[in-house]
Image (cartoon, rainbow, N blue to C red; front, side, top):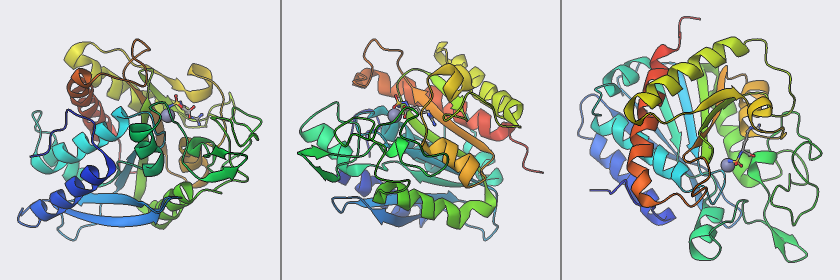
Length: 309
Ligand code: 0X9
Ligand code: ZN
């Protein structure tokens, strides 16, 4: 089987997603289907796997992504672990309830070019790999989303910068693919969770301003259900709050766009382990505890949401 406790390359990740689809074909109560929602600058597939009961009933949905930032390897690993737990069952026995309540969309690797470059050439690469000229590459996909897009707020107009915001909102193929997919599916979408590292934070909008959304208290309470459940396993502490107030202001994030642009109520950026001892280069022996506690946090968070409104 697939070893969830190592960092996999792009091709192995795609193979796993295909294997999950094949496996569910003979499962009576769970169905998985795989779509390519777009292509990266270098032509790699950007994939979404939908996991549902497969009983023809349409449920509220949750969209979860990882790997917007190339060097944050723990994020794709975590989303892949979620896929495995959802399909093959989990130790807490929560996946049946999760599938009864929601349809699930997982995009484990939104920036495959950057991820491969981080594996092959430069471990700390962050952006995508679009060619900019001047011998510089890449746009920061998490500055490129089109809600209150503004390079002056935590981004840059310098193509060589690690936080280059792009020539305009949604200038990048990778962010466009997410935009199109979420807009096409937004009528039922209740939550958007984007996994990053590091810092151990469960962040909600806004990232472009220190103001808070009108319903911030609902987002805050739900996040606290998640972090409390997460902490039960190993005592790992996560901070909850708005991106700007807990971290820094940065416009053009996917979380701000999911909420402000697509109208997805519960939108979050989750910064996984650790708090800086290893930073982006999280050792493989932390993949398992990170994934286990994150799954627990996600499950209790999702089960706490009120789908009747
Ligand atoms: O700066 C980012 O894009 C995120 N932190 S990271 O270290 N993973 O790069 C935080 C994004 C928070 N959300 C917004 N600023 N909208
Ligand atoms: Zn990140």
